[in-house]
Image (cartoon, rainbow, N blue to C red; front, side, top):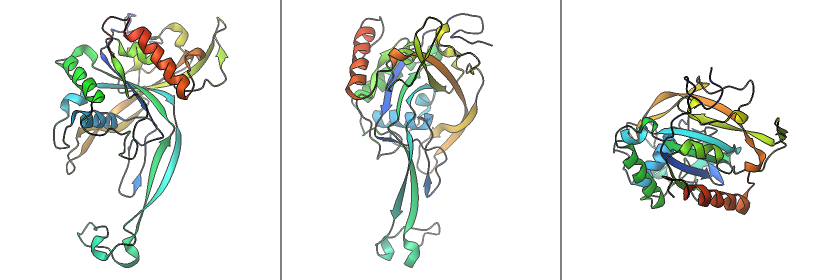
Length: 298
């Protein structure tokens, strides 16, 4: 079983071209099992939510195909998991009978049935760093990634974190890189470092969770990042129904896909704190590495 960032034959994973995104804001909501009046959220950005964000940036209508976007791989680093927040909404109250919510039979609600209660769940103050990559560089994925990057810089339609009521805060696109997963591990973490443990060299370290739609042996991990006894992300931890086949309002369908998890140990010095301190550290990292490393572009 592989425990470091190596392939089964012991080699370092090949660098992968991709985009690096920063998904943070006051509220996020990545619906997973939402149904009628109950709107839930996953604990992290979903494939359907991030692909939908790209489609909005590109200006694609819901009836247009998303097969090209669906071939991109999603790897998420949980900087701050956020706090679940459940909100109560009322729909249809105080309206005339003809303006109330339509029933499944096409009729209008009357009397006390005119007001519906709905619950919406959000993640408050969450922060995630995301790598969108094209494993193997199949087809014209380099062109697709470049188009997505340009669209995220100048989106056709407003972007949001799962729901329209959840706009992103600060820079969303961090940049393009020919080794996106390397930077995903090493970018400053948008969190205050909790009490740390020291490694064998005396360096303070903290753990961070990574989630992906494929085995996490793709991560270029150094031996000091590996936590003894922790899952190495080679087998799925669960399954999610968030692989979109299309976003057509009347034919919106999703497929199941595996979810892989891995926890890595990162230096406490990589935790950049909150607010201006974090954005300053992020800007310094991008200036130092993305402009200096060949092939990396902002």
